[in-house]
Image 1 (cartoon, chains in turn green, blue):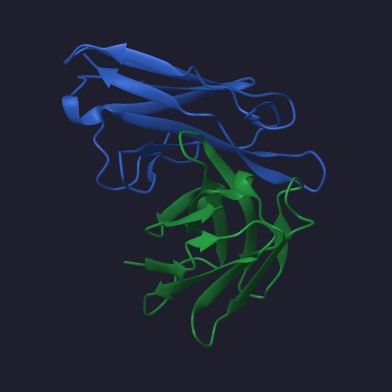
Image 2: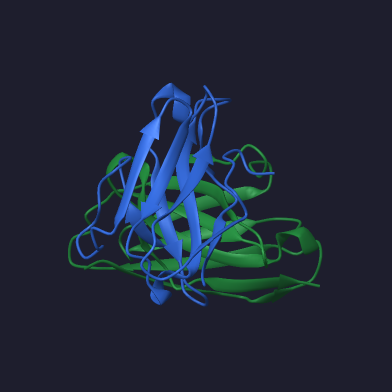
Length: 116
Length: 112
């Protein structure tokens, strides 16, 4: 069973850079695609972007100017960077593993990021 | 403003059947992209409930079912239980720009 464990700074000031890491725990991951997804307080889910095992990325058009994702398979780590944050970026951030047809089968525990 | 439209809330009494809709357009659901559904309980990450329009992952009761037609999809829950009270989200893919994942705004299910 794949398990995703996230960590990163939870409190930022406006204009700073959000940085989160997601570790993929399993002897053999069943997927080669992962996404970052966020949920603002009281709001719905928003896809931030995806990355595959080769480091190929695709980002949400609304965020792509500020987002960078990377993968380090030697450490089974995924990383998310979001620059120039504002209060609108306050949200729970999740990493998730892709499954068949583009669904998200496994989710990290979530990291609450607050921008003051 | 979510790309996929879901009703903000639905409700039903224990034992009843409820349905909730997910309306998209010709660039996402109508383009043939699969629809997936998630259940989000308070304080927990979303859980995959239905994938590939109408398939249940192992462990999901058969009280949950879904369908898709045209530019819309629907989730049905029969034999409603108190533990089903949660937020439900639909998800698909959109062809516009370079293509991106889209979610509905979520539907809050209240078990009366």
